[in-house]
Image (cartoon, rainbow over all chains, first blue to last red; front, top):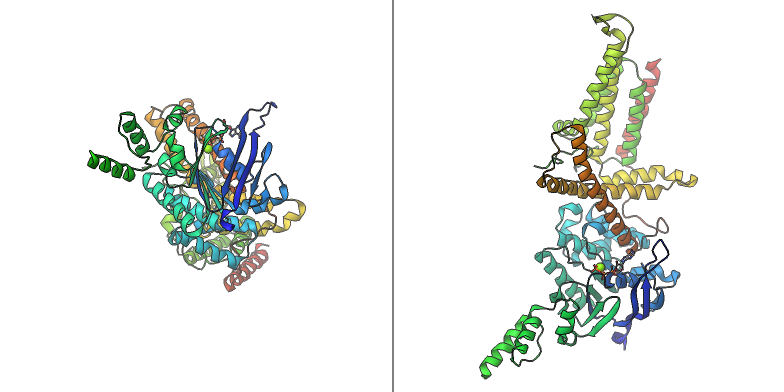
Amino acid sequence: MKDQEQTIEAKQVAFQYESEDGSSTPVLQNVSFSIKKGSFVSIIGHNGSGKSTIAKLINALLVPSEGAIIVSGFSTSEQEYLWEIRQQVGMVFQNPDNQIVGTIVEDDVAFGLENLGIEREEMRKRIDESLAAVKMSAYLKSQPQRLSGGQKQRVAIAGILAMRPSIIILDEATAMLDPQGRKEVMQLVHQLHLEEGFTIVNITHFPEETLGSDRIIVMEQGKIYADGTPSEVYADVEGLLAIGLDVPFAVRLHHFLQQHGFSLSTVLDQEELVDELCKSLLKT
Amino acid sequence: MSILQNFTLGQFVPSDSFVHRLDPRSKFLFLLVYAVVVFLSNQIWLYAVFTAILIFSLRLSKLSLAYIFRGLKPVWFLLVFTIILQLFLTKGGEVYVQWGWFSIEEDGVRQAFFIAMRLGLIVVMSSLLTLTTSPMDLTDGIEKMLGPFKKIGLPVHELALMLSIAIRFIPTLLEETDKIMKAQMSRGANFESGGMISRAKAMIAIVIPLFVSAFRRAEDLALAMEARGYRGDVGRTKLRQLAFSYRDGLVIVFMILMVVAVGVWRV
Ligand SMILES: Nc1ncnc2c1ncn2[C@@H]1O[C@H](COP(=O)(O)OP(=O)(O)OP(=O)(O)O)[C@@H](O)[C@H]1O
Ligand SMILES: [Mg+2]
């Protein structure tokens, strides 16, 4: 079945950065996972746990020291597939300012297309389409410094959409945004996932952002600590808190209530929690 | 307000005037030729002609004179300094003023006039280029014009990209400088008074954090560019294309006439 296809596969991946004095500390060890086409996966983990490294490995910006990463059937370790992989996998980075290359919006969206060697007519068409998709058409000729953080991130996403990828990786893309900008970007990402079928990998520090995902991978010191649906992962509240991770507010409150003798069925977000509480109140 | 607010030198003003719609390459070429003939001329009346050409170009650009001259503030000092230097240090011809060893003589006045005219005309004409040409057109023009030098190994594409990235990041870095300055001032740093040494020290407190952040940005940007499939000039297309129009033809014809006229009358 087509929609069961694995689009990203990491097979026993290990990675270390080589430092100048020849020594190296392992950053990833024995990391294996596979991501289904069209799924929405969140990656959470402590600072330095290797999340960004995973993102860079998927986009072939880094190559595994051991093991292999297969993206849409291409191994990232093989140089000849590099450009296919980079076209397939779009990346949005944390700092909105540091990923915009063009002096105006239209130039920036064109950058990836120019790299791919797309014809001009086609470029024009794709620029218009992808800016419309992120609702930034009105800003075609704007200079990046005139845009808000959320708008800059949307332009960055447009630049990626124009390249027609199948996977979008967001590496803490909302970390530097205000709540409004964060909402804009996450809404857009969910819409792209639901309506256009993009595979999304969202690396984040905000536990609330992970609730809408199909799956959460928890990283801890270069290893996968947990991997499952949000309800599976957040069932282990104590474990997550013990490795210093935050959990969504509703999950924490639910956990607290249970510890104090309330029996409630598992919930993830605040609405579910409110429903659950009302139900249990009615029962008593 | 911000100390860096009145930074207008070389800031593009969008419009649809005749000058704005010229191809950047013809503007560059015209500026170059204009600069050369202005420098080579030694007749006072020729400078009247060059001034007329400049005023005509300014009219064609529809820019406000006030805006242009505001952008030239940093240059005034240089201009006045050079004039004074020429005025007092060049000797020869009739002596106009004499106070002890200190004198203003005919050749000095003459030289000061020429230098002032040359610098003034060329500076205003160049700022006309940057005020009427968008940064993208500017870099595209440079890239195209230097194109032939690729053959001898000049990294033309890289130079043009560097230039456009620099232009892209100037406002970002200015904003950041402003932020750092305010942060340092709130810690008691003083940039406006004090001796040379204490001011230089205060500047270091700006420059170092600015450098650190610029390097960080450069690293991020390089990564983002690579992630978007950048691999140098190989198999690359361009969104922007330059095209000559009848306007450029007019400018080129005018330029040739100017060169011929100066060539004939100079001797
Ligand atoms: N270029 C590099 N050279 C050497 N070590 C690096 C480099 N980049 C990252 N590291 C190290 O690799 C480890 C994992 O880094 P990574 O950036 O993947 O973490 P992360 O989970 O993304 O953290 P954060 O939440 O802070 O973004 C860290 O210990 C970091 O110090
Ligand atoms: Mg990271």
